[in-house]
Amino acid sequence: MLILAGCTAEVEQAPTWVGPAPTVIPLLSIDTGLTANLQAANETALDSISNSTVQTQAELVAATPTLAVAEQADALVAPETKLHEVYIFDDQLNKNWDLAQSFGMSYDLQSTAHRFEPLDSANEVDSGATSIAITPEQDFGELYFTVRPDAAESYPRGQVIGISFWLNGGGDFIDTEALAITIVGSNSNPSWSAADNPVQADGQGLYSETRLYHLELSRSIPPNTWVQVIVLFKKLLYDPEFEYLTGLYLKNDEGYRNTFY
Image 1: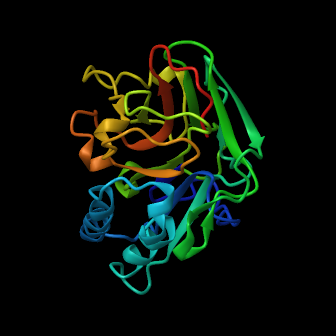
Image 2: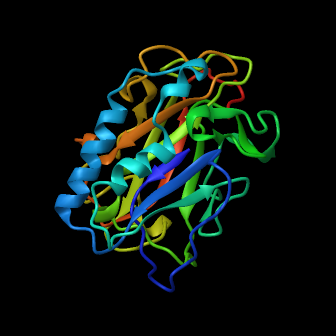
């Protein structure tokens, strides 16, 4: 999974998370000096990717995933603006994030079931040494990634473009109704806090739980196939506004119990 966003250091500037291509979640981050116009230009570039037809693993050779997104955005920003990626999970969980708020799902952060499988052959992107194996144990469980209170980085909404992640259903199909993703934010805290009551925002209603079929997936994901999913924040039209990205979660639908990655 990959989060396309900008990040700044509230406490101290943490070094860029360096490692092989993401298994789950990196942040595409842009310098704090990036203007609103440049952010809009980046979103336009990412729009062209999110609107493309969903591709299977065999078709991904010609796709434009993480690295290509960075290259497109690089061409749109000023030379003095450095574009970089910050991984939430790249063979291990980023120290600024945790999964403590998860429930109804078991997970293995060191699964080798899909070790070094190709995601995008053209750009030599693979699934890394490990991926997260996730098994729902009840209806509507949540794998909940949250920003830690002691995080060295914060993720202001004004610099966040969106989130992207790769899904694989192992030996089973993933139906387009099987999973949903929700983005969570805060107007006061740069990290997740239960005191924020983060599923509610100033009486504006719940943050949306966006199913896969609303994320350009027109058909089920075949077994043992990696597919990239992109969530652009500007397309979450009914979500309340927030100042900081503080979390995101994947939720399984009623009756869905298959292990996925």
